[in-house]
Image (cartoon, rainbow, N blue to C red):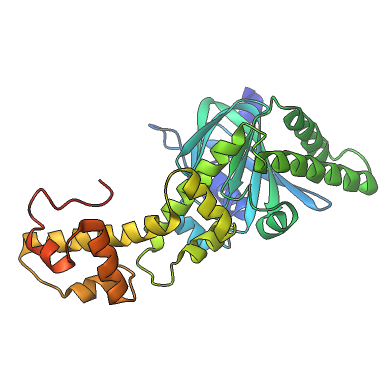
Length: 322
């Protein structure tokens, strides 16, 4: 980033406030070893599209579950790296962005942005999450990268540049906006069909977010496979297919999280010399049917929970996730 631009940027507190006003709840941190950083964010509204122009001189920007609970989490952010480099993380995947690359960030799930010392300039197209899913389906929910070297990536970049520059009258801006959505639709249809290299990455991101959601919510009896799928913005059948393709099961993942919790509680009791009722522990873990809980426990451990507790301190008692 040129030095004259860097010198004109606002300090950390002002940049933090700007990010929250434009994008929602995010935590902005200066580079390691620094007390401050400089950045500026402006929002350009063009007909039906809003684009945030984000400059900063090296910072970390995080969005965790606490941030998500503080706002409506209603956006997808299509981030174009215009200058500099960054590393974006959503789910368990890091995506390195060079100038011209894109990533779709889903505000409904945690994300992390890391920027290099040379500074960064990004354009972030704000898209209504529900409307986007209604228009294009759910394959982009949960985040996905879009390599800038693809033909569609280059066309998207040129279209976003025209939107930000505000070229043309209102009618022309309308057609530019429609061109943007047509390009997005073409890319996402190919990704959903598995024709693009990012389809596998997108599936991995979606499954990582489903597992993270289960880890957060498994103790709630209302957390069912259908609830997980709804939170991911996909159909239950579609999410089940993704787990099956990975040799797993959505139901097994949810039940496994609950059984792990029960086993940890039983082992902790053995170590502490306490003895809560097994039914109480089962209900705390999210089970709402003791018969079902007992069947699942025996199927997994080959012994009833009471017998497992008797031997909880022995090496033979292992968590299903080990």
